Length: 238
Image (cartoon, rainbow, N blue to C red):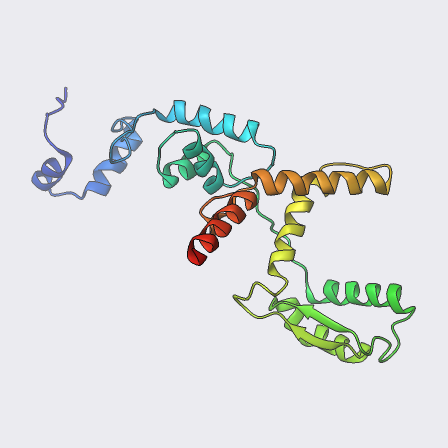
């Protein structure tokens, strides 16, 4: 009958002349294993179970859907719950609460089809040079830089107005808000009339300015960020 010695695994492996990986594999096959190890570092003021309950409450009480772990972490701080962002990420990942990410990207053929559709709607056809005088703003996505898409631009007679990196004047800010509009309203709700849609979009704009958190502004809402910037400008003029 074997007896379990109160010795560290590394010492036992050194004396027996075997590797620790081989010893762990033998333990696994025999159905015995070490107790689960706790993550390193302090546990914090709240246990994982308590913090996960707070995270679920934050997500349930938020007026938005699909908020990521960074905004959840920021909203916890507003509640006075201090914890690390990495811990919030770990708990939301383990609980399946991470925000969904888009996996489907527009291809060069779909982008060109959309361009022809819009041109036909606006100018009545897709004949050569039918859109002369029109400038197209597009970003550096591979579908827009592809030869197929660029040839279509030349055929329609459209002038190029590429968006440059790190410039707020480009289409990035508008595209981000359109994405938010889709995720929060258009993909979730149905509208019987155009006026209902218009009203709902205006409601989202009000809620967005009052409660949407912007990471680039230190997790302030647009209204808070505007107030902060105005205060800095007034202080600089004083």
